[in-house]
Every structure is written in C-alpha cells, then in structure tokens.
Image 1 (cartoon, rainbow, N blue to C red):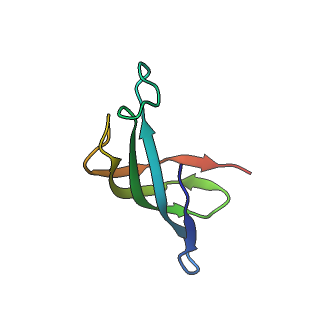
Image 2: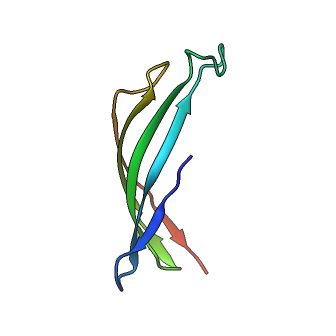
Length: 89
C-alpha cells in the first residue's frame, strides 16, 4: 500500500512524488499468524516526467525499517529504482 503527494517542479516537465509505503510478508504454512507476519514501512520519493508523450524515466529512492520484528521484517532497508516506459497518444 502506498500514498503520495505530487509536487510540480516549477515550469519544468517534471514532478516529485513523496509519500509513505507499507509492505507485509507472511508464509503460506502459517498464513497471517501472529508471530509469522511482518510489516515494514518506507518513506520514498521519485522524480517523474509530466509530459503526455515520449519516453519516461521515473527515478525512485526510499528508506525505511521493519514495523514488526517477525518473519521477514528487515531492521532497515534502502531502495532505488529506475523505470523506463513510453507514452503514446
């Protein structure tokens, strides 16, 4: 689950999106068990183009930590990502 606020960068064709993300993990053998389901939270931001056509290259960075110290929850996590896609009219 994620949410964010899109902030335009002046008159340039780019915007910054900032917001929190929450992830969970649980094993199949004890689905949603009290000590086997982990949660983690991230605060992330990305820069993305706002043009309606052409190549888009959104870049994302984030940092966070485990919210629940059970199965699969990290102590902390850093993420970076680059997406490549094109818009057509």
